[in-house]
Image 1 (cartoon, rainbow, N blue to C red):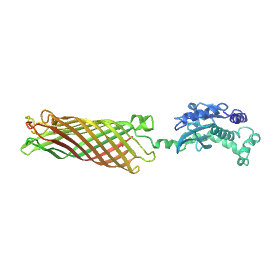
Image 2 (spheres, rainbow, N blue to C red):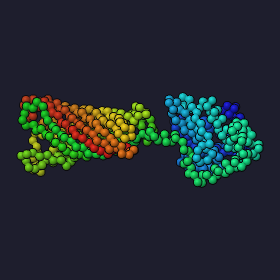
Image 3 (cartoon, rainbow, N blue to C red):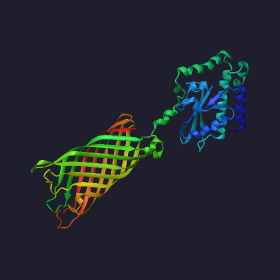
Image 4 (cartoon, helix red, strand yellow):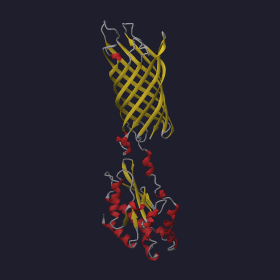
Length: 436
C-alpha cells in the first residue's frame, strides 16, 4: 500500500470515529478472486471489514443482515474481458438499488490491479466512504472536508437532508428485495454464453435399404430392396466439463445413439408367409464441439467412435430362410466431422455431418457361408435444418445416408461368386432436440 493510500484511509477512519463498517461480497469473472484480495487487503488495513458470509444471501448483499452487523457499505466487483484486456467494474452500495459509486479500472496482463490503478480504487473508496460518513458527526465540522473534494455538494442543506438520507437505508431494505442490490449487467453476461452440457435427440427415420452385387458369376445370390421402412432413433450428447468450466475444454464430451426397427417383415412372391426382419444401429464415441468464433454460434465437432449396424431376415417357424441372402452385422470404427451453422441466429440452423467407417466385422456376408475372403468400408452423412421453438428446444428435419461397400476375393469353384456388393441406406429423419 502506498503512503498516500494509507493516509487517505487513516484520515477517513479518524473523521468517522471508526463508525463505518464495510463488507466485500465475492467478485465475479476471470481473476476476480485475485483482484478482490488486492482491494480487501488494502482497505481492511484501516477500515472495519465484516466477513461477507455474515451479511450476504446466495452471495448477494442482504441489507437485513447488514443492519444487524451495522454494515453501511457493500463493495462488489465484476471482471470482464473488453477487447483483449480484462477490466474491473467496481460498485459501492449504501442501500438496495443503484450503486452509490461505480467506476471501471483496467487490469494488467496478470489479471490484477497495477499500483497506480489500486491507488485509484482507494481514492474512489475513500471519497465515497467520506461522503457517506459526513452526516454522522456534527454537521458544521464534517461537511467542510468533502466540500473541498466535491464543490457541487457545498450548497446542500447542512442538517435535515443528510438525516433523512441516513434513515432511508434502514427502512428501504424491508420493502425492497436484496436482489436489487446488484442490478449490473456482468451477471447476465456471465450466463449468456453458458456452454451446453446435455443434448437429447428423439426422432424417427424413413429409409430405403438396398443390397446389390457387382460382377456376379453365379445365379444364386439374391438382391434385396426394402422400398420404405421406419425406425425410431434416440441420441444423446454429454459434456461433463461444461458443468465446471466455460473454456475450450467444455466442448469435450461423449455421444451415443441407437436406431431400431424390430417389427419389419420381408416377403417373397412365391411364399405367402412373411419373414421376420429387424434392423439395429448403435453408435458410441467421443466428440469435441468447438466454437471457433466467439461472437458467432458456429460449431465444428470432430468425432471418433464405434458403430454396430445389422440387418437381419430371420427364418419362418418351419425353419425356411430366404436362400442366397446373407444377414449383415457390421462392426467398425467411425470418424468424421459435424457442423452447425446458424443461418438466422437463435432461430434457424443448418447442420451436417460426414464420416468414414472402416469395417472390421461384417457378419454372414464375409464368412465361409457366403464369401470367405473380403473387406468392407463405409461412408455416412447427413444434412438438414433446425428450427428453434424455444431456447432449449429445436425441431430438426434432414437427409441421411449410409453406404457400405464390400470387395470379395473368390474362386470359380466357390458357391457364390461376385466381385463386390453395396449395402445402401438412404432417406430422411425428423426429430426433437433438447439442449441444456
